[in-house]
Image (tube, rainbow, N blue to C red; front, side, top):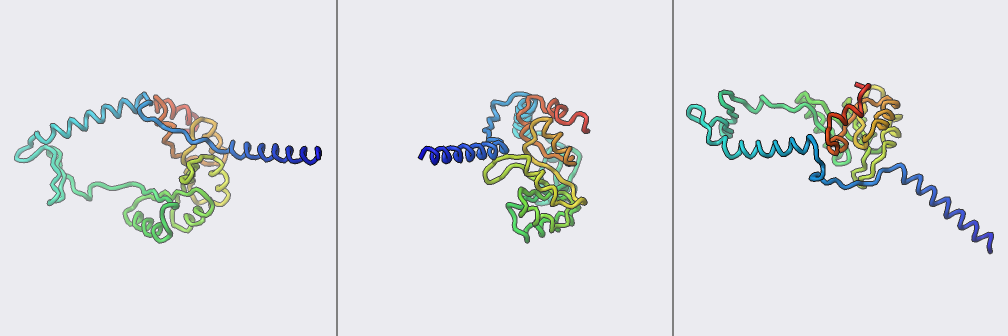
Length: 220
């Protein structure tokens, strides 16, 4: 009886240890409180809000000849800024992000073809092997691997490293999310991943420029 109890206790301890190892691969979800972040971005946000409100309330009163200095002429499809005139075709996008988890194969193909017609680059974002297989069917060069599971918001850099073996050499891998310290960058570079999409780390940093230097100095 004592021996049986001991075996059960041992199995429970082993299971708990395995759970701890498994959970350690993932970062716990952390709440973000934007108003508690102080630094360059917060100052720029305040300046931006003040500037936009000033433009909103005062620019309509400015005149340029016989019209407003800044004018959206929707019927004529023109945009006036002082003596400059812009047409819709003067504005264009450079890249399109396609999230495989949010689109079916027909939509992925349709948007990829549209992007190529408009001479835009396409970044196809995946999170697991199934999504990667679908993404590789598309005639695109950029493959983004999101280390954050959009269903559970758990984050692990192992997501990128585990999918690399399935990606052909003619594709460029962009690792997304989960990059918070220089060791993370070094780990990705060691796996020959040299393109990064980083947002949260810069948003949390009081001085984003210093954070950029901390992460990539010596690599760029």
